[in-house]
Length: 117
Image (cartoon, rainbow, N blue to C red; front, side, top):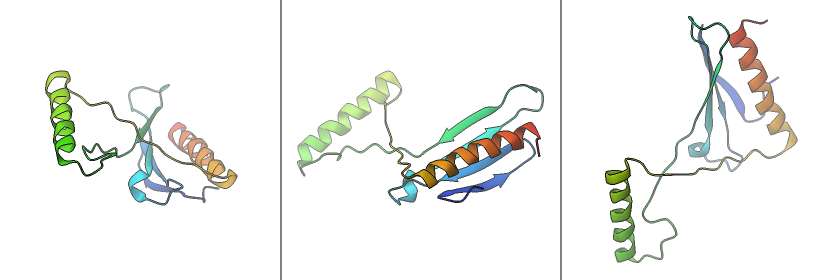
């Protein structure tokens, strides 16, 4: 049974969504998991993870306004010339109960999409 910091948020004929809370307690760090099955493809299940990730020129800042402007310019140039920024985000799962709930959501979502009871 799913319980510890994992909840089903939406259920459709071809998709089911779960929200998994980060152990730190901030809802900005939560991850949404989507199980999706396309009607015309019988043997393929899509597992998608969605997470908000932020970029800030003030990260590790020592309140140096010139340094912050330089980082904004560098970030803007990367987007302008490369078309993207590389970002990383963390997500903390702590404790056996939280891990078990996460794996149970994965099993339940897979069964739901496959049409199993």
